Length: 478
Ligand SMILES: Cc1cc2nc3c(=O)[nH]c(=O)nc-3n(C[C@H](O)[C@H](O)[C@H](O)COP(=O)(O)OP(=O)(O)OC[C@H]3O[C@@H](n4cnc5c(N)ncnc54)[C@H](O)[C@@H]3O)c2cc1C
Image (cartoon, rainbow, N blue to C red):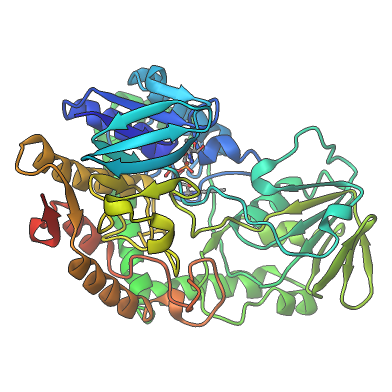
């Protein structure tokens, strides 16, 4: 069987390694960029770090004794992925600069086309094209007329001087919080344009000492224990998220509230920074020092809405002009894209764009009726809320390999979930999602156009159990 893996980020690298380990060596990884790494190649903004502990944000088969911090910085994470890809012989299997633009299922095989005219025919497609990948730009009048430098946080322009400059940041998510803390002491003025205040979980980020790292190196079991302990903690957290009144949620809320009350001195600023919704309703922001940073004399939280951008800066609705040299758009990603804009055409000319015209969905986020032998990693409505997406992708890939085994054994040549199963799954998921913390009354990127959280609404244990082996009765096999 021949495979195509689309994307050489964390999930694409994982797919190549696991396919080979399972005995499938005929595959090509298509990557539109010139290096592996996905998210960690694209995001280079100051302060970038993971917000899942590094020992959990690692492949289970590649623990890393050398993580520098509990939440290690972005460049270290990129180096980790590049190192894994090199050590496992993935890099030479990647066709770089090859953007897949079309995948069509005809006569039992997927026919792929790249932007530069390459063609391929494969039996199985693994789409590892990312979820936080297509930058979302805000719809603000005059953005294109700004005279200074303006860029999205995922397209950081390192040629732009920050020292002594007047910086505006639009957005208050994890990225904006990381940037503020990293640059506030370098810049002349920092204006944070806030539409929604965020709860901030006071999360310390200690460095691992040389002795600790040497200990991990000498005793890999201790590292595995560290992984297991953190994983247990995170999975307990997930149970909290799906039950908005759980003790875990109460603990998180208490910690966030105390952080705000105790660490923001000025009562006016404290009220500006106080969210009006429950902690963890939006993606929980973790930071040891955001409140310190935003209370520096050169920093300001601007809560007045943005009227427009002018050549000199941002004009807010109260008529005030915030003069700026640099405007950073930390406004997140289009989270409804997944494998798109690739034109995916399934059996009998069925187009993915039509199937997903209302909103994207997939059976267990992996597989779509009418699109046989086409599998998504980190696809629609998966467990995205403050988990290690590596752990998620590893479990999903195990499931995909279970489906591929049906093809390999000759028991069938085409496999995709039935319409009926998928519709039922989606109805149950939607109903459960409404009762999670993400559906408890806030505006966030977790919500679809109906306001339903686009997420796995059950516990992580249930996810793991579901991923342990495909229930074949849910699938149509031909
Ligand atoms: C700032 C930031 C911080 C994050 N922090 C965390 C964290 O702490 N913990 C966590 O679990 N997750 C975090 N994430 C989520 C992160 O995206 C995932 O953890 C993970 O990196 C996703 O890997 P991926 O391989 O699925 O997708 P990506 O890393 O997005 O990789 C997709 C790859 O596919 C390629 N591609 C896309 N379309 C095509 C095409 N048509 N043809 C060819 N190639 C294509 C892209 O160029 C890219 O290299 C963070 C995301 C961001 C943006």
